Image 1 (tube, helix red, strand yellow):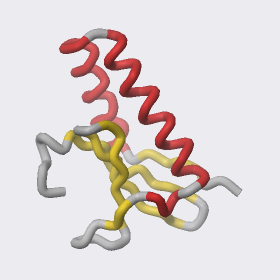
Image 2: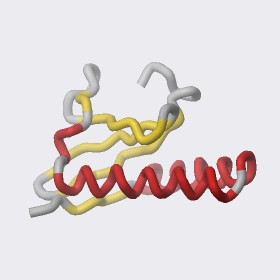
Image 3: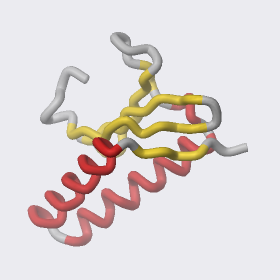
Image 4: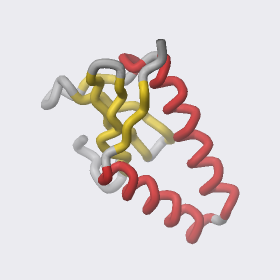
Length: 95
């Protein structure tokens, strides 16, 4: 049985901001590739939620690279994958 994907408001807002930035800076194709990649990673998490690496400081939180510079941070609760945030690792290199 697949896990349900649940987004926090912070995750939704950061996802939107990254997509808008990519659209403005690099055009539709780059922004579209980003959203396609995020959706593909989420489909993987639905089936294999433990694939991401645990954070040392917060073992209940996992991270999964989306693209070279973007990470999805999430937690697993019952049959849900809770998307806590999507961050650009160039802006937050220590996470």
